[in-house]
Length: 297
Ligand SMILES: [Zn+2]
Image (cartoon, rainbow, N blue to C red):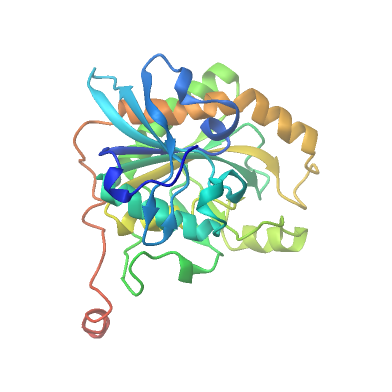
């Protein structure tokens, strides 16, 4: 990857695909016959520091029109451009979402791996969360500090629906299962959780756990974009039977990652061209100076 470019050079795009376990590792949308890649991945300078590398994909939608899609791989500090220096993951998220807003992105589809913290979800299941509980520090998750962001239906119902249709098909083909409701619990990492922590998170209502999803889900709301994610269960969390096994986890990623990435890419191609959801109505509330009026009303 070359040097960090000016934000003025950011391409315009209506969609973003945030790749992690699927498109971000084994699979890649580059080889999909519906996709052409426009140039090399580039990092862009933002008020929050450099973005992770971003590719511009041109994706043929199900209705035949071409969609501009900004694509990122896992925002892992080890993958940053040398020129970008080292910044934290939350700082990279701020930079990325600032760039997505500047590019005009209105809909964001993500995919990732997760661990099951209950006995109900098993490795290889696909899960489309409808809600989340965030156990990470929230102070780093705002582009505009103090802005009130509504979290009613935090995951876009329209994107969840297309992810659900694709996930059901995937589950039927792969003899696994898909779920269109789950509560995602976000934890800080990078260490994994203890068995006692996992038991506590499950009692609080969590179903699956990972170090992703936040702050992305509320940064998307802050920039007025729709967001949803599909997660593949890679393992049971600590203390959930049977004990997780790194070889099995790696095998699931190896076998399922490309397909998981394809579910997310299919969803971008299948979304209706017009946004008909209620996400925009649930957008940003009053600013810091006005929220007192709201709360005292
Ligand atoms: Zn929406």
